[in-house]
Length: 161
Image (cartoon, rainbow, N blue to C red; front, side):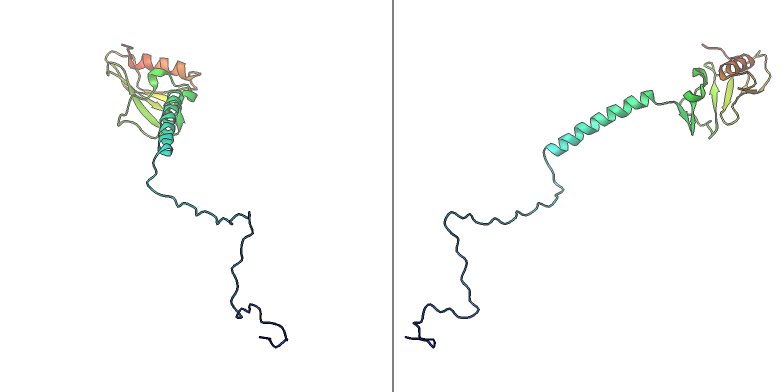
C-alpha cells in the first residue's frame, strides 16, 4: 500500500516509542560504578591486630618517656630546680601542698618542709639532741640548693641510715 507521500509503507513506528540501541560487535558493555561499602562495626582481621601492636608500641614508648621524664611537683620541675635526691617527695603522702611538701628522715625522727615558692627549706621537726634552731633556710642565703640542704640537715639532726 502506498502512503500519503506516494511511497511504500516501511516499518513505521508509533510516535514516542524508541528502539533500544544495539551494540556493535566487539563493543564492551558499559560498566556501572560499584556501590561503596558502608562502614561496619564488626571489623575483623588485620586492622584490629595492627591497632593492638600499635598500642603495645605506644605503651613501651610512654614507659621510656616516664623514666626520662623530669620529677615534678605541681607545676614545679624539681630536677630543673636542682633539688637533692634526699629532698624529693616521698611517695603519695597527704602532707603535700601546691607549693610545698614535707620530707621525713629515714628514721622518721626529723622532718624538713621544702618550700618551692619561697625557694627555701623549713626545719619542721628536730631530732632529739639536734643543734637547731627551727626555722627557714633560704637557697639564696647559702648560695645554692645543695649548701642550704646540707645546713638544714645539720640543724634538724638528719641521719642517712
